[in-house]
Length: 164
Image (cartoon, rainbow, N blue to C red; front, side, top):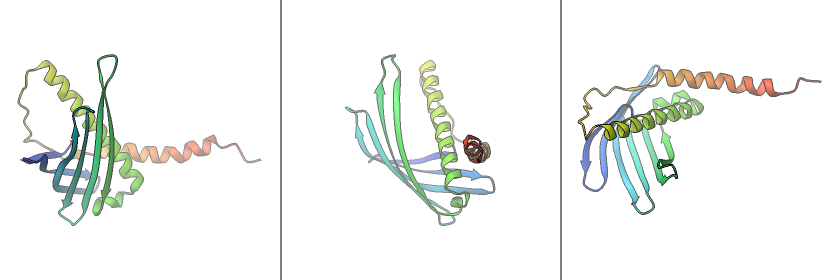
């Protein structure tokens, strides 16, 4: 995940770490844990919960479930369902903007996983350095989200028939 650092692995499927997020003037870091709550290899389904605390008192809690399905063309289709509740300074951004930013962050995550899988296929288990972890590059995501929020009402207005 962009901006994330894995700090410790506990034996029961629990991972401890942190994630840095900077959205314009609002920058924060969460420390917390992710725990696998269900793993079903036969149905290729995984569920996990995550919780973290920000230094300023905010929290983030979420769940994620994902499943994989082999397609006829030899690819794998991955379906993911995520739910997140956030409190603290980062909430000042507003719900719509946060949803757009979260969607774009997840897109970055998917692109990163895809690239790592492709690299692993071409190279045999190379070591990757995680020392230069940076905060999520959210400014472009916010600008894209703001642009979308401007376009939505304009599209609605342009689709309406003129008043008679």
